[in-house]
Length: 158
Length: 261
Image (cartoon, chains in turn cyan, orange):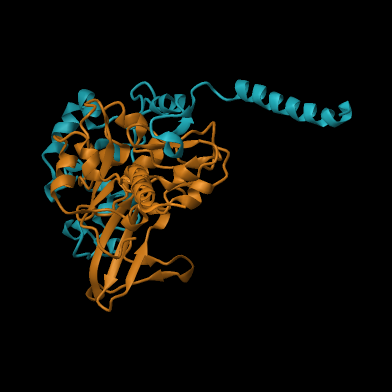
């Protein structure tokens, strides 16, 4: 057989070789089949560590308690004790270095998340004291103007 | 010409040969996951939602978006809370405005293009809230359909997305029966709840669990028999979503109702 018959074959073999060489450099060494096999465990193993190193923002009430024990003690005696500090004060991240001051959410909407009364008999929502018509009660003003969220009982009115 | 002796011999061998690989089709269930104590260091993360405790405040959704850097005003979220209102006439209304990022501060049901539905108090038969998040399925269909190996199940059961490897084809978003996946508007890759993988692997609770004032959300390790979440799942009446799909979802619900899909 003459060589011109073989020539396209060499071209195809060359292309396959090139693709395999490119693949060797492009695909990371830890990419492959892991514990759960091809169907569920086909991935780049280093990505697990990458996700573990994601930044934590919400530090938790115990973190706040360390420097603000007075605030912690005061709220712990009230029905609002169940609310984590960061729900209203925002995520601590690296406070006090970054951010030095947390932006507190004082909006009416924040309070109404629980205290807008919804008459749902099969949910805990119906057991929370609240407003069915909040606009009839000092509309436009922040709830915290009168009510102290760390002492929400009516005796705690400012 | 085959004689009777050879025919019977071959038949027995053939049936034995076919029956053997059937062991490979063994189905994995929560009891088996729980019972597997072969490796004590092993962890299998599961989630427990109590729909009776949930009041629909949406603090979990807000915390999740801030913790996981999901653009706050984009209408995408890793977790959301659905409201169900069942009327005495037998009608079912459900909504989740902005994924309940700002909670539910009106009794009007958001019907999207059909406007708002006001239901009178006396017409309500049942009303409740159902938090939703990734089920971290034992057999995740989203992982099966990924053509490039960008989404996978970590050894502890959590399904993760490799952002550097994802090509954004969207097969996984279509493949998830629970609709928990979406495109991240910034990274342009598939995005999903990963049980706050960076937190649970450090011994912290997920952002949504920590933010919930009512204890409606809990995370646990089903391989640990002393874990309070494991105890509830193994001893109380829990339900899962869309069990018939065979995905083996690992988010268990207390107080689940048949209207919840």
